[in-house]
Length: 450
Ligand code: AMP
Image (cartoon, rainbow, N blue to C red):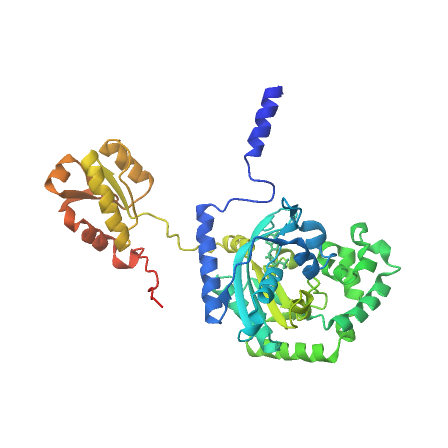
């Protein structure tokens, strides 16, 4: 290969998306829009208000919250320094930023619990594959200021409703566990460490240092290796070491889940990968593929507000992966309404006609007719060809004669028939042809002055 073509190759590669990220193309945006709409609707119904935290924060916010040994902090964070040498990170998850904001903005003064939701991109240097990207969208809920298993249950219920709304109600099974209080867990961690000591050979080399550093994570990784899975099944069970308060809390939560008719699997190996959790942890797993294709997870994080410098406030949260839901919706052949299709292409001939057509397009938009055109200098036939490519059901045509007569031609593109109507009646005729129900009316809420 010549030097020149090497150069060209490099240049070509430079203009592809970086590894692990992808464009959200218009067809996928229809899914994004639909999923976000469902999330917004369900969140609002339940009393959540939306928050958006910055795309980047001080890196320490995440290392403090999630723990230095977590995969996210130790391997997956996008770290960078700004020009003043501040250490920053692209946000790898949503909870830490929301809790930082709760403290920074004095939200403990508001009526508690404070219920917030977000829909935003996150960044992790993950191993890319289908449904696993380096920039991915999460929607999440945080309920800060109250500890009550009824809240955990209602949060889980909200997520199941979202899955149902998206046509995925039967696809996922809830996995629940309790990881107790930090003190009780510490005791259990010691027992677990003792259990793994002497069995090092069965633990894959890449995870061996976790035996002493954080043996809980070995349970978390049991889906990655068969031997680890066998060990996890033999390991002492966390529940036997937990505090009474956490166990009673968990029993109460399960009774609420039963009451709400939510199916669940008690999963003693479920610990979630982040340090901030206590008591309730849960994930939604694919019924067939298990943890590999989890669509979301969450749990209680009663200590995090205090850890980040706020007055102690208990909290519970959940984050779901929008991209993964999208992949599953497509896999299940679920289609969402595509609202991008145009109703009308407007074709014109001559400068005067073009002027009239621009005005006409504005009037059509105002009543909710999706219209485009009045561009270029091509012949009417060429423009009809374009209209065909856009697959519009109607074309409006205006030539020199129509301008003079103040008329326009409406062409039915399916039937190939056309009618000449007075220009002033065009909008009304189009509304009749398209049908009130099919219009795309934009009605912003009413504005009022203070
Ligand atoms: P986590 O808190 O890590 O369990 O993440 C919550 C959810 O976000 C997961 O269940 C996934 O649906 C989604 N998620 C996490 N990481 C990625 C990723 N790299 N690409 C796509 N979705 C992800």
